[in-house]
Image (cartoon, rainbow, N blue to C red; front, side, top):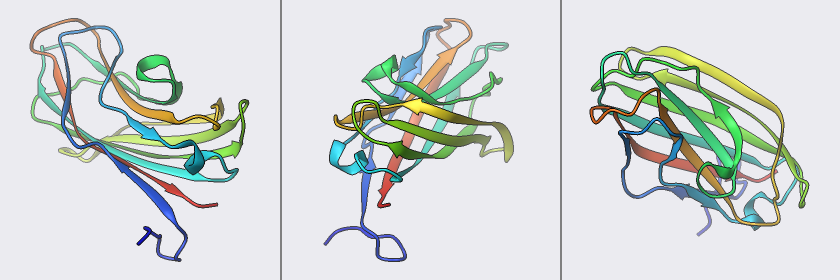
Length: 172
């Protein structure tokens, strides 16, 4: 039986099964990605909802973190859907990142717009909100939806783990 939303419209659901940790690097590094099948996103006005939960295992005092969501090529090669403000990640804090991407046009020169927000689940503070007015995506191919982390400095104590990540593709 196919998944449907509350009005019976079919959806596709993607989830990441295992934790993915980024540690000791000042380079943008990809966590485990979700691969969206082209038939699910190759329709104009299709909406991709996503939610990620990250956990700061430990941090080096003074180091900051930037999170991104990318759509497209694997790893850090995709188009940016969301970029957080740089924030002071604190050990044992949980962060929720959620947003939506709407496919505007399809094909090799497909476009999307998006918005997302990030907040500290532990303190319930909104850390950042961002939107993309017009991004590029080839909807004829399977595309990765990827969360990335960038620490301000490489330190062994800087560790952030992607604990859960899911996306739903809603029919237009």
